[in-house]
Amino acid sequence: MDQAVARPPAVDARDDRRGRAEIAFARDPSGRTYIRRQFVSYPYHVCRPLILAGDPPGMVTLYLQSCAGGIFRNDRLAEHIVATEGAAGHVTTQGATIVHGMDTGMARQQVTIEAAAGSFVEVLPDPFILFPGARFTSDIRLRADAAATVVVADSFICHDPAGSGASFDWYHGSLAVEDAAGAVVARDRFKIDGGDVDAALPGITGRFVTQGALYILDRQRPVQALVDALRESVPTMDRIYAGASALPGDCGAWLRVIAADGVSLRAAMTGAWQAVRRLLTGMTPPPRRK
Image (cartoon, rainbow, N blue to C red; front, side):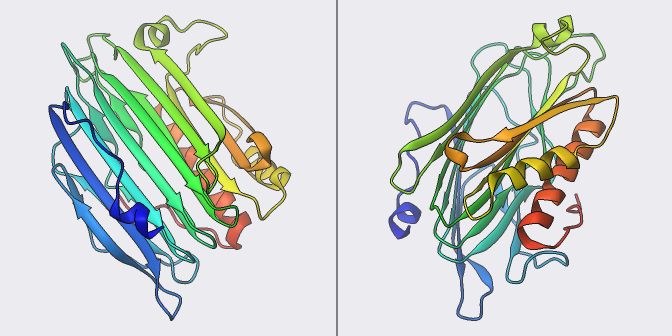
């Protein structure tokens, strides 16, 4: 894992604007997690790690902030988060991230997460807010030891601040799960166009205009227990439609949620995370203050 910390994923030199955040969690002899290495470039900013009530002993929470006021045309952002053996870290954002409209070009965010044996890492950013004309790609790569636990969220909502009825152009989502040797064991990819969301087509999105997914990699517990916890966590609400199933190879479970609004999406995603944490640790975390 030390090599992974020293050699973050490459960013294309042709990119017009690049931002990088590299975080490495490690465990000290007392069992507490600390930030062993950090590097950020604009627009990222890292706050000091926090120890919060309701978390497992030794876990730290880190807020990864942006100084830019959102994501803009031709932005290329790369995040590399490493949890070394026995470390426990929770990474979140200061709030939802706006993806601004683009008359040309597009924006991309690449997130790489590596988890060593015995580590427990959660990467739970708030949703992306897609403004009219936004074109955005979210790429997530998870590489985890069989004895590690990783929880990751990816979600978006739509918003037209002018109230003109305009929509985002497109959103591409991709997540790949790799074993410790780098072999792909699961992959999730999708593309959604703003026009399809606006059309509210039955059987596609209907009246549900926001979307989120929660992925849990954990081989230490029966996968059906994870699936059951996810299914039971989603509130019975008219404004939410969700489903959970096992990941390929029983390496974990995942939940997909579509919702009629951002408030309903947040309720479903928070409830699912709390249910999973309760199953994994026996403790229910309070929502992070934003």
